[in-house]
Image (cartoon, rainbow, N blue to C red):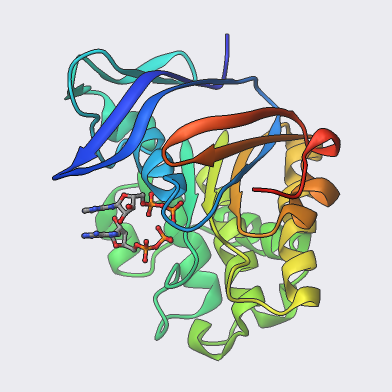
Length: 242
Ligand code: ADP
Ligand code: ADP
């Protein structure tokens, strides 16, 4: 079974057809780049897979980890539960700036522990150690006590990846996570995504502006053009006209 299956997804915003009959399958453990010009539909597709929006019409269906996220124009009743298995990373504002890096990462536990424990900062030792390990894996263990607003953009994205690890996400959806980063920070974020993909088998779908990062880090690329899948294949076969 695919980790992510999108069938016949179309999305209309007023007169704009943001997605046109998009169907894709992503196998467990794949790392897929989603590329396309600004406005081609990348964010819209990611929001639909994340269960944050539902498609137009009733032909579409989105399945994540063999669970129906939406079908026939309706969000599943289980959407909230399925979302706990999905880590979502945006271009910016992934963290609560005034809270420590550790607390931000521990927020990943909140799906599995009673919310009041998080509110009062009562995480167990084991949870704190797990958060530390996740920070070490993405290479920012030394920032654990800092306020997250003091981190660089790339460190913030890596903290968001650590939070997804602690959350136990089996699928990570990253929407232009490196768009506002310098090249060396961008590489470290992509390497962190690649590492957890390979080591833990987490399925990663990452939207990118730059084709060269897709070629470097993602075996497979999906390219959108005007809301349609214009390419789906090995990133090495990708031409420069996307
Ligand atoms: P990308 O992520 O590739 O830049 P988007 O998915 O953000 O593309 O947008 C695809 C198209 O849908 C664009 O024309 C955009 O303006 C439109 N769009 C996206 N979200 C909305 C929205 N919430 N309301 C209206 N139009 C939207
Ligand atoms: P991206 O390129 O990452 O999609 P955008 O600037 O296109 O970023 O969109 C940022 C947010 O604005 C998204 O949540 C999107 O849904 C919304 N948006 C995009 N286009 C429109 C639009 N034409 N009307 C209303 N909301 C929009």
